[in-house]
Image 1 (cartoon, rainbow, N blue to C red):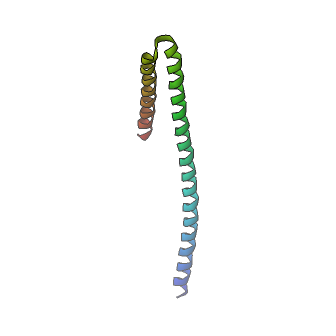
Image 2 (cartoon, rainbow, N blue to C red):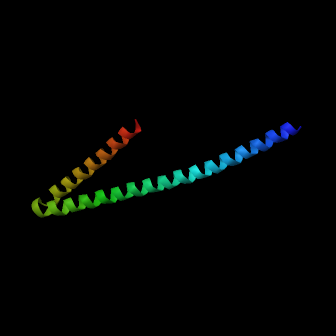
Image 3 (cartoon, rainbow, N blue to C red):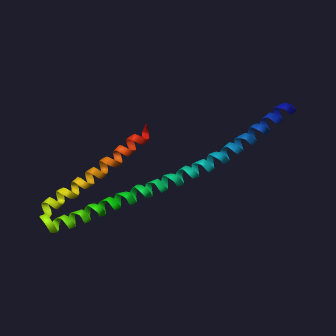
Length: 91
């Protein structure tokens, strides 16, 4: 009977340590996901401002239609680069 009690107590200690480790790793993962999300958001905002700046500069030279085309190409190229990097990192 003492062996069964010792086994159960050891099992409970292991479960307690594993739950603490799970809690720590979950918090670390969620924190990292938050940083990643903020980085993606800031990259998106930066890309939009870059396209807007490109549009403004090109609009002074060739007009708004060509400037819109140039800004759209810039955004599409940026999105393509992000997708390529993401696909490369998944392998």
